[in-house]
Image (cartoon, rainbow, N blue to C red; front, side, top):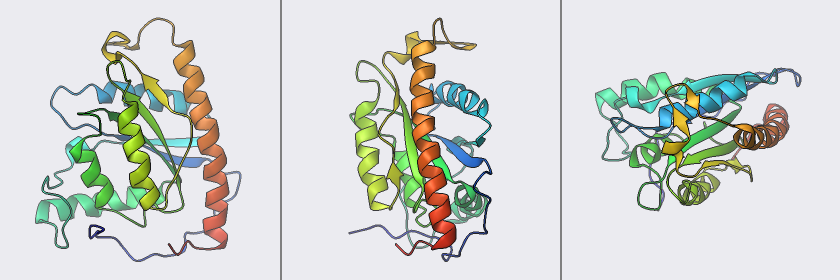
Amino acid sequence: MSLTTVSSPSVAPPAVPSSAPLRLAVIIGSVREGRFGAAVAHWFAGAARHRPDLEVEVIDPAGLPLEVTGPTERPGDGTARSLEALRPRLAAADAFVVVTPEYNHSYPAALKNLIDWHREEWQAKPAGFVSYGGMSGGLRAVEHLRQVFAELHTVTVRDTVSFHNAWDRFGEDGLRGDDESAGAAAKTLLDQLVWWGRALREARAGHPYGG
């Protein structure tokens, strides 16, 4: 049984020139005190901002008082205000990158809530993943997220950026030492995301998605 989400009615997006940069939302998946994810997210966002084909916004749910009991038909006042501010930012995005840790072989509960409070905002758009953790590099969290986004009619790109033993790879100024492999992985992910983003943006403009 699907959870009830609170979403605005589907409307056709305004036409966007095919050459216009894609609007990329980078979502920080962890809200824990002392979290590591913000460092990873800001490193990735910085790499994405070097591309002329992308406009990048970082979305940090740590500042949003979303209820931890899960989506319901009638959100509380604090959650309703957060959703009112967040929903247009997700709706305006052409593509998403979710930065996630791995908690007990899966992804954080706060990230699940953020995803489940929305529906049309995710549909017919591409999503990529940047994960971090210990030996697994957060990849088991990514595999679970792929299933969730498939249910929401979101296209997930194949390649990921994964940081194994991430705490040894980042310092106060970002990624330590040689980041050539990480940069190459980020480029591959973004290349795939841009291809799908352009294709799906054009498709949505011509034929509003009815999923």
